[in-house]
Length: 73
Image (cartoon, rainbow, N blue to C red; front, side, top):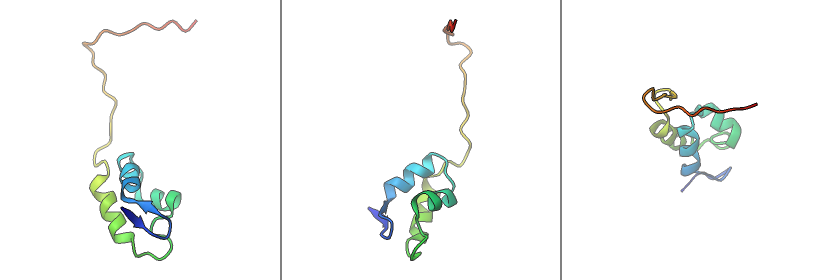
């Protein structure tokens, strides 16, 4: 569904950006959401809020898994 009519930004696009860790202000700058008429801001922020990553994502390493040796030279 199109959330921002002025810039044709969908809920899926906002969701994808939020799950990628983008701040709402970054989405505004990159996509123009809620920067023209402002009618979509509440809906866009709600979608972003529901989909954003609350905790930072960490790369975990499984110490019990066999490690592959890589020869770069």
